[in-house]
View (cartoon, rainbow, N blue to C red):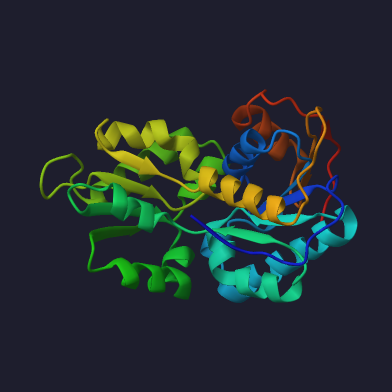
Length: 283
């Protein structure tokens, strides 16, 4: 599910869309955006030099989000900003919209509302970072739905970091631990039949999570809804990129260049094709 607001229309349809995350998980959202908007240009910033956000404080995350947004706007002239990070959305989305009132800003939040609509047993598991789960926005969302379903909410300390490091042994151990903590999965009464992937890193390990939940459990993440909301805002602003060509992609990072390169090669599909440009950095 996305959180967004229409700002003043941006006239330059050829300007890129900025996308950022604390690290590599936002590539799952970028993939959905590229699929929904194949003609668009994208600038993706991975703040790997300051990750993981999910284990930092709100003030730190808000300050980093503000710095990254300014860089994407001032240095790259973005026409829209996608905050492809649940933690950054929870800590900084209001600040970003206040600082950039003319810029359409789209954020992400755990898909609790779609999960309530999808669940037949009324029991839903939510995996997310601790900072996301402790945020005011998440608490308000949960409280608004608490009378419609039972939620088993699990803070997954260390999981996003293990995914970024491609530490398979650690990933497997944490998946087993956190899904056991959530409860019993299945489609019968009293079982958890829906799993909300409340961090953009988690779709990349869906197959590993599936080993513990079984095939009957429905997984929900935020990539496709965010892409559709971004498209809608650009249409309203008259800022969709036209023509018959494909878009391009620039990858930026505050950490090691090779880490982002490897993740993009591993997780981004070849279609639609893009021209990957050189990296930049923001300290």
